[in-house]
Length: 390
Ligand SMILES: Cc1cc2nc3c(=O)[nH]c(=O)nc-3n(C[C@H](O)[C@H](O)[C@H](O)COP(=O)(O)OP(=O)(O)OC[C@H]3O[C@@H](n4cnc5c(N)ncnc54)[C@H](O)[C@@H]3O)c2cc1C
Image (cartoon, rainbow, N blue to C red):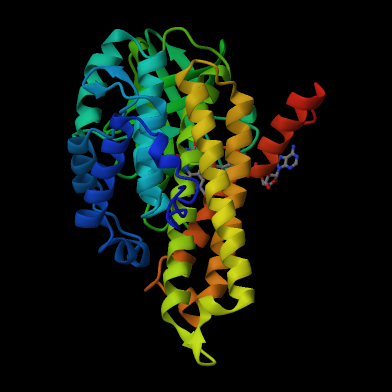
């Protein structure tokens, strides 16, 4: 006889995970319970994060650059990496961002496009969390259209000199190394910039109402002088940064399943335990309608993520698949968070419960790593063959 579905994994998706994937899930869940869940609301409220401590903790779990090969990285499957993102984002999108920026943006960029010297110098220390990285692409006047960036790198003798401003850079205030993308006479190029270099400043972005358990910075490059070897040797144009964003977006489309699941579970638990009009809220038809809607969204998003993960592991992933997953799953997670928020009534707006924190975070997730509109345009182009970006 078939078993009644588990409300916490309705479609039984985790039963299909490989042993390694389940082990990573369990390790991240245990770490979250012991080290993250009790603190995350405080970090969110104060906008402060013990970055060095978190980096060491995530490093000791093997999460930093876990899907990369060599240089102290674990070389796990893409699905295993996705599952780790899912479990981290079930705690908070800011913590998943911390790991994504380190592993999928900064480390991936150095791994894929850096020289052997860059890799040897930075990756082993970044994998353990001894060194932190950030990724500077966005500028105050260049977001969805990074090709219009103004940051410039010019040759001066054998050196490079970088000038410009990057904006909204996660971990910029705590990074030891920044991967910075800049215009050159030869097109856009990437540079490995130790943040202690004279002329480099990182200023904290304050007054955020979303992703508060994450550090965000403005990077100012004021005549930052670097040796010729600081540039990524081969890659030119947007292909470089976009390849890294594709990696990070993959983590997002898994991660938001965790945020959605956390909101659904909070709403389920709350409506089962709170009574009005003489019975649990969960016993009313209108509440059950909402629970049915959100359990469908959580599981549908989980299926999308798994399929995209399997495509990546098989080497069949196209960036349009990632756009599909980012757009579909962030949208699902936001709709779950908004619905769950209402189900908790007044408590739904409190930091005592995770739901509104997730809801506010997901507004950032909708915008960064390609806005929903950019991914819609990417899908539109994929199905019509017509580009409508400009
Ligand atoms: C908390 C946080 C952390 C971040 N971390 C990083 C980081 O680590 N590194 C980094 O480089 N960046 C980072 N970003 C920046 C992020 O990637 C950008 O915010 C994002 O790319 C959007 O750019 P923008 O904010 O300039 O919006 P804009 O590009 O100005 O867009 C504004 C609105 O216009 C829409 N729009 C733009 N063009 C079109 C068009 N052609 N057709 C229809 N609609 C359009 C957009 O979809 C959006 O709705 C972060 C952002 C946040 C909020």
